[in-house]
Image (cartoon, rainbow, N blue to C red; front, side, top):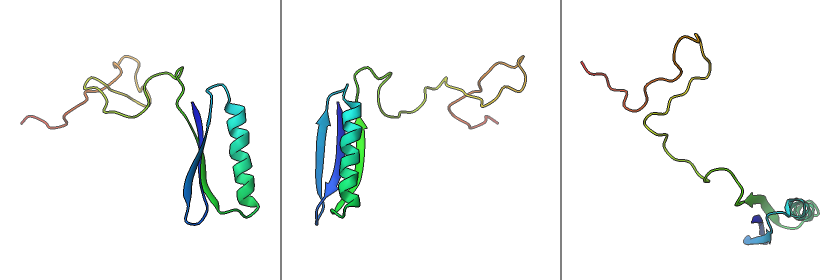
Length: 93
């Protein structure tokens, strides 16, 4: 599903228009028509488009990385294994 959201009027009222997953062009055209109304002086703000498509890869959202996750931006020496210990940074003394 694709949804275009915007605020309209004084005081602002939330509005939305729903589009099918395959109607991205129509949703973009509609969002631009709402923005055009704003340029013409109507009290409209916060025009945005949001999608939640079934064929998207992975789940939406953010979570903590697993304890064994490690990442380097670059590999200084190919002989050094990638990654570094993750999790607690406290050192035993």
